[in-house]
Length: 522
Image (cartoon, rainbow, N blue to C red; front, top):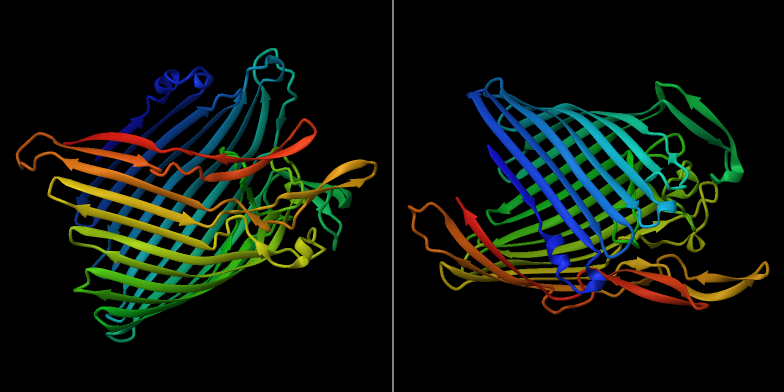
């Protein structure tokens, strides 16, 4: 068994800062536990649980809190030397709450949570020396509370609003075969069939056919007291090949299709836990994708140095993007503010890794693009004249270097460096007059980028003595996070001040941060 927990004394530290920071708060805790037991040679059970909660208030009247809870039970059973099973069930929850009580008349709390209950059955069957089969049945139940807005305190005049909860059931049946064609060539082939049911009770908006979903094209709504509101089903396919040219050089190729029935809607301008999730329903279709990949893998110097190069290409369909001026929070008709897009992603990944020796580490470089296109006038607005535009997370260049050097058994240093292209953004580029007022003119969507990201971390590791018979083994880690003090922007935002619009960059940890860790191992 393992039991662990953490918390922080950050609130005490914030009280020691200058006066303008003393109203800030930052706290967290997490607890985790796991236990495994082998009843006999054929039966083992594993239990695990985790809970965490974070809360912060950065010198403002708004507090943010969020947390995770999950637990699971896994049973492993060996039927015989050819067949074994792994059965897992569990529960996951993520929730956040935003609150403000500085002004009693407008004090509020805003909450969101997503819950999942799952059952996974996996069987592995050794058919022969050439064929190994994997098959199983998975079930996943979703329950979302997409928004709960309530007054805080008896003096608050906030009008309560509670969005209707959503629920769905996703079942999947799969079968795959690992086929050893020869000593050098192996193949993986698989098919997975998914059945997704969006469940009531629910009110579903009905819109005019062939027109974008807007409040103006809303015809009526239909109430479902229970049962299946909308069902989606489709097969997914997977195929992979591996050819070993020799003991140190291999080639891999793959193709797979995917479907995803839950959508993430992220706020990319605020460093706050305000992302929401949306289930596929009659008005929002599941995401679909198909990807091909090819990779070369080569080891050198008795497999102590690993190198690889991989290329991939992916097509996407029904990926959700926002309409201009979209409102995501407490929106009971979210389908009018989002639209399904088609997209493509492609890139190349390079890796060099040294596993042993006084100097070890790895360097990776990725060049990748993720582009979207919204050019169907029947599903939503046309963006950028129907041309492809960068997705919010499109960052073409990404470099990571990790280096460790051990001077002796007790002293070593580590350097971590990372660089990536800045995230795409849409900027205001001018003003124009319309209907008797001045309006802001925006550039094409995601046609600009925030500055590139670069960070270097440095640490020294000092171990205690290496005596075998001692109660504890102690060590120190002394380092600096973001040693160059670079103010990496997380987002760019604009504020109207004195009749002009001023732009600001929001940096997270825009300074060098030293730290000291003392570790005790029993």
